[in-house]
Length: 467
Image 1: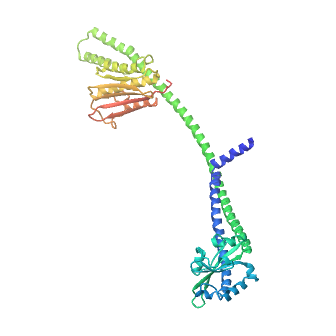
Image 2 (image 1 turned 30 degrees about the vertical axis):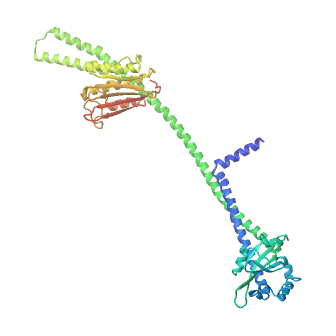
Image 3 (image 1 turned 135 degrees about the vertical axis):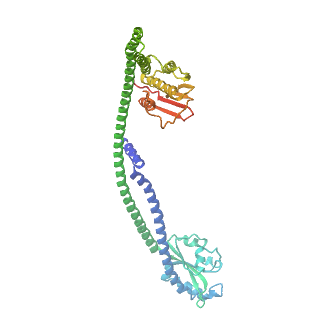
């Protein structure tokens, strides 16, 4: 039972999932239907041809016998007594009588004027198609088609009969003056037709079977080729998936390495800024203080030294402020953005405002907070230095999928196609911001036109990223 179920399952899969199986199922149905249609048509055509040929031969013979006796029907409604007697002798006790089991002679309008069955004489019947065909001068024949009302006696015999309608022509005019209908025993014809039909069916089935097998062989070979190619494609697909997975892991490792490198570089810059502020700046401040206490003579050289010390202190403080970084580890994302705005206000005496901060309290990685802080810091600095903006607004929100930080100003604007390089003031510029966002699988979008202000957006996905 289990083996039968397994075989059935395999058969269903073969017919459903394979090209040869689908062709065998659909093509088999088409071949069988085609064979039935063609075989039926061919056998019917053969039967009609054989029946018509046999009927024509019998009709010509019968007309040669009946035509001299039926010439009276050209002017009369019946045969003369001598003609009727001669007709009876022809079909009684002769070999012809053994072959022809019955006969009828018709006049126009479906009138039977003479018949082997005396009960039919003088009766009228609806003319059949074959009878009308004979009145048109053609011979009509049919085999075992005894469905007309006047054929009940012949149908009751239960033997194969060839029914023939033969027109009887007038000698001098050629006009059809009557129609002779006779029924000839057709045992030999039935045997011949059975043999011919059997042979025609064998030929049709053989041709269709051979064609089907040939086509199946072609489809089977094509199916094997397709199956082999599908196997190769699956192997290639598996290999591609493996390489894609490996590339994804490598990409993730590269991104993590880039994030660590960026974070480490920012920490290094922060330490450099602190060292400059706590070391070099203190020494310069002490040198400036001692120089003032020394009260040097107000000479040109003394003024130059004093100006150089002041300029060095100013530049050093600016560098320190640019490198400075708050303790981001202890801040959440909202606090980082607020801190960047507050630091910018102190340094640039700016009127930058914080708009909507719709940020969830979900913890974020150090790299993400650092990226947002540097983005706000750099963008606000550019707006204050170059845009001459009177209004600057910072908005931030997350939708559960990504964090978006937007900075909008009403400044002079610019053409993004011409001013996206590294800043000549030491800032990162738009390429640097985009590179930093790319390490977190994020992106930076810019909208600006000369005279219409600027909007810059940072978008970072909220998936957990290893710092």
